[in-house]
Length: 409
Image 1 (cartoon, rainbow, N blue to C red):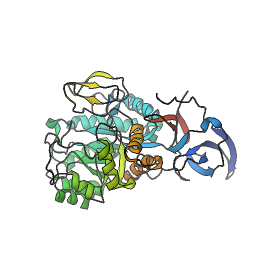
Image 2 (image 1 turned 60 degrees about the horizontal axis):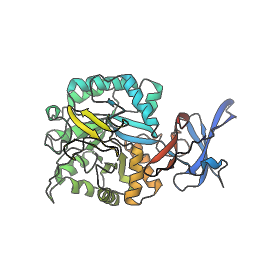
Image 3 (image 1 turned 135 degrees about the vertical axis):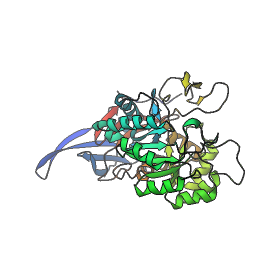
Image 4 (image 1 turned 90 degrees about the horizontal axis):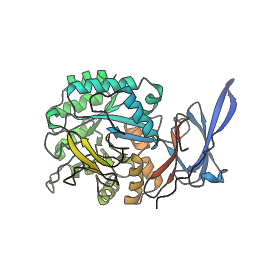
């Protein structure tokens, strides 16, 4: 039986103090600190964490099982609740719809991700995303975007669900035009390091401060090292975007695991990776070099059933697996990043603090978002209050820059 979600009223105590002659509101949020389960009160002033106070006990018994953690940072969101960032006809309202829906699952920051698409689609959709970030509420949650492709391997298996017709070699001039439409807010690019021109492309991205990820590739150990030497810092959804049949020695998995300078993002929904794979990645990379992502698609947040996906029929099971009806091949992800945090603890026996770090501090630092991802004085007050359910985190309240954007009613 699933844990009952307590209907809580998390008390936000509003005080008024004088700072430099000005009246400033202080909001106090209380609960159990996610790192050690100790009672704490966090004081927020002007949208930032002002004080962290350790308490002997919680004043409100309703908070007995409620944790406080940093707001979740999802490095890869392809879409949600029927919206795909890569599909034609994307609107600002679509972006707002996704953003507000993600608040309900504790995501305070995310990178809308556009995958391999025609050039014109890139221009159109990145322009829409850039326009959407002109809205203050969206801008707080969307600091920039992730371009996954089109400069990836054209080979089946490594290409994944990306359309082969739109896969192409790295084109720096094309990217500059696309990034211009995005108002230079493309924060991260995923590409295959073995394709012609990739290493030079990586070098140019790094020069412009863009995070480079390697993914959907079949690069050799030498080519992976060359990519990292030139500034690539993370492997995108390690263990996925890979062929089912690979050489036992010469394959892209071993060198990515062995490269200490390379972080790895992983999908921990229980379908994309087996528990023992997650456990192995955790043991090799450690908590500081893993990033939990959802990699959710437009079917996430919708009810189970049959759907049309990329021109093909797919089924989303009650458990959240999206697959083609006649086979067990996955057709995307549907579970939020909260499930990844829960599963990380379940699969590896890591602590709540460690699992949360992989979905907050690590992706924030990866994308140079130094104002969030941690509960520290001076950081932006992006916070979640949650309890642990039977198979997921149960979000009670989501706070962004000190403002409550979602609360259980």
